[in-house]
Image 1 (cartoon, rainbow, N blue to C red):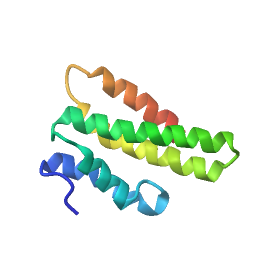
Image 2 (image 1 turned 30 degrees about the vertical axis):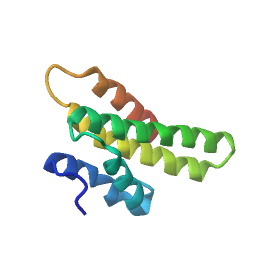
Image 3 (image 1 turned 90 degrees about the horizontal axis):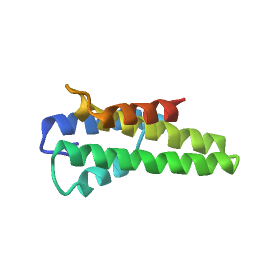
Length: 111
């Protein structure tokens, strides 16, 4: 399944598909994130995946408050997976502050 013309974006975006059975993402959601990008640059890529991850953290917190721990776990795993996709575009020197922030959110979601 090709999601992006940029081979690096396409490679990273396909990672959540490897976690389909473990709530790491759905084909439709991953395709929707890719389709929503109006420009194929690294900043837009990071923003799209981070926004999707943030939505899943919110959903996970709501599920947790409602006592639905299994549902919450799925959202947190998906959030961690999506943060992981986005942060790869931020590696480099000097360290982009968004990398540190996203990694902290990824770790919290995974925990």
